[in-house]
Length: 188
Image (cartoon, rainbow, N blue to C red):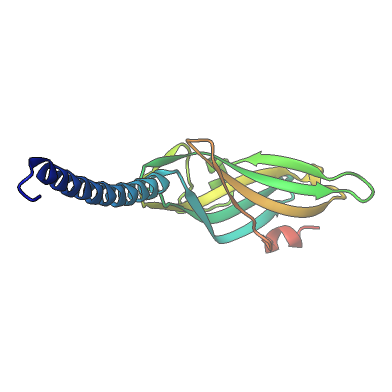
């Protein structure tokens, strides 16, 4: 029976099938690991800006009839790909008693730095590149006409950062210090 050629062909075919099955199983495991790695790499390349609030204050100017909001922030790019900061806005939600809630969007204006007398502070400009795994830091400034706030109650603040992909990251300052100029308070 072992001298029969067809028996040997069958044995060799069975062994070849087992070896092929083992290689197929091993290739499947390698392919699954490669897919998992590729998915992790794709996830790491997705744009993702993380904002952090360092400090913030608001200051009213009676002679100018304006209110200036200033926030010291940092933005970290946690992605493996470069990104860019495209826009910065302050969302102000307020209401008057017995009236609907109103939302106001204020654009960031780096030129307001000089109005605060903060000549040596660094204002964040836009657009600004943020390299992969890099962080930028600086101040953002917003201006609001005091007349808009006459008789209103402010419900919330939100600083919105929009990247070059159109994705938004947000900061919600809960308490904002109010800075008062003693010279302005002493005026009659």
